[in-house]
Image (tube, rainbow, N blue to C red):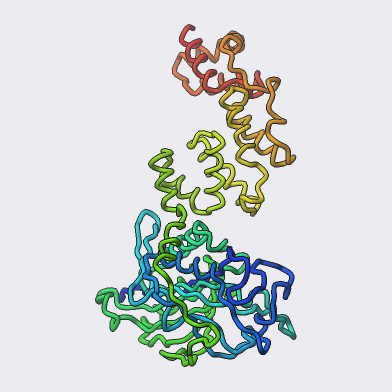
Length: 483
């Protein structure tokens, strides 16, 4: 059977959520579930309205290009992409086509996929306006202009990706870039990330660097979740493989991902070039990008996910896995940084964040911003452990009780329910238990080592779980050796 190599290119669209207004109008740029509340006449294509460029959106676009190792243009200008669709009432989209941000030089993105470091070339990244959104019902469709004119950053890669796993890893990396750089929340639940996926198959034995060996590609439009991207790619690879194995030819076409059926569905055939009649936007004069401004922007690039991960490993002593879990979401990484800042030991904080906190977020399907326990509250618990007031088991009980009752952990920490760490008291309790279990001691001495756990259990039962477990085991070993 012929082996095929998948060639996958992505067109990632990400709404910029970190600007106060839209890209060409003064309408508020914020997520709203109430339709048609963040609008101005320009967003609805009213005659006589004129666009004004949002400088902050341009600044963030240029910052993104720097992070992705792209070149920056000498001049910035916009073009009209002419087409009719109900979500674009003025019948054109203001975008960048002939002069997007990289100018003749590929950008480059390095990202982790499992234990491997992968590289994807960036064809271009450009700033444009988003379209309105349509809600389709049984007998009618409603239009919501809240999204119309939201600044949209489109990233176009070369077909350097070879699997669904790599594609998702790349998208997760880019989401973290946008979040850490303060460009976007990059929240797919709010529709802020959408992706077009281009897939073709080629003979795996041929030279991948020669485009003439590439297969015919299919484009899957508007996949709105990373899981959807993964499933659409896997399905499309299987579909194209079956066609080729049966002696057929893959048709160049546009398809859509249907979540209900788990399949891609043909929308239309796709020619090599669609004439959108691009021309320079006459109402936005081109403007020069000064080197001084570029240097100013470069100086404001914040610490990114990989920077933090390296810091957590090299300075805080975390494992690569734990550091990766923490930096995956910027909000969680910010929470962890605050934990360390308020005085929690870095490794202790990492254990709580990666196990208990992330687990609770997943269980309740909430974000860290909605999580009740703040870093300062978590410190109340870790201080309780350090001061000998709480055992590890008690600390978890306090943690979950504080969440359940929405009260600060300190309300459940007191000397009355503190763990027993007094050696004299523990020795008294252990001696009494051993005196009452002579037959078990005899069996233990005879080789039944597992009875040690029985004695530990008896101590915990006697103290209602308050005995310091480390001290309990040390004293038990000592007392058993005496007998």
